[in-house]
Amino acid sequence: MDETEELIRLCVRALVAQMIAAPGIELHVTRSCVLGLTDEPLADHNRLILGADPDVEGFLVRSVARAKERNRPLTAIMSPHVAQSLAPVATGLGLAAVGTAPLMVLRPDVAVQPGRPTKIVRALGPELVGIAGDLIAAAFDEPRDVVARCLEVSITETSGVATYIAWGDEGPMCTVSVTPTGDTAGITLMATPPEHQRKGMGRALLSQIIDDYRRRGVVRFHLGATEAGRPLYASLGFEQIAELSAWVLPASSVERG
Image 1 (tube, rainbow, N blue to C red):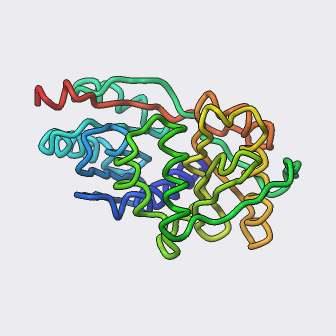
Image 2 (image 1 turned 90 degrees about the horizontal axis):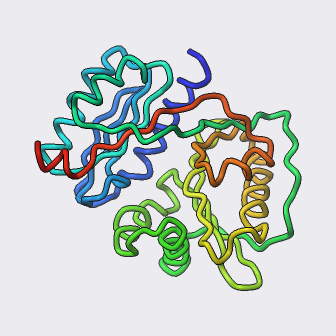
């Protein structure tokens, strides 16, 4: 198995950990694919990951059928190993291609330059979890109640998702989540509200988190980047190893059935 498919399998596990407590959660999982549907009528909270599974086309077809049955829009990510063959199937099912998501990796031999000294705490307990939720909602322009229902519920000591908050002169300024599996950790929900961006806080937070997890035995980190976030990750030493195809099943397709 190549590294891209290995990391997609880890992303499948991470998505399950992040979604498992969401209201109305319905999960269908193989080693390389996952469908997660919730009660939320928003594509960002109904997710599909498609890796190189022997029955990946069947998994796609069944997933879209189930999303339509539940009247849910859907966001899908496809491995480059299956994207070309699945593209006509996805189009026929009503999905629309919306670009790509770079899959990036930080390897063990890459030194990460530290950012500014920053107070960082793990978000545990209602007050800190609420602060993390505030930052996520502001950074991604998400409805605050949806963040509480779908994301805050997974920020617990035993969920497998660890969330951290960085404090600056203006109070809590950014947050990030980590899903470790063995000696590899996924980085997700790197969230800095617009008023706190370009102040070095994202770098400070992520560099300290990487250093901390390396001391715990994690040797490799991976993430799916946005175009806005890619320069930060590249400057920290992350390298792109693949482009994942991004698709959306819009609400209009769901309503048409």
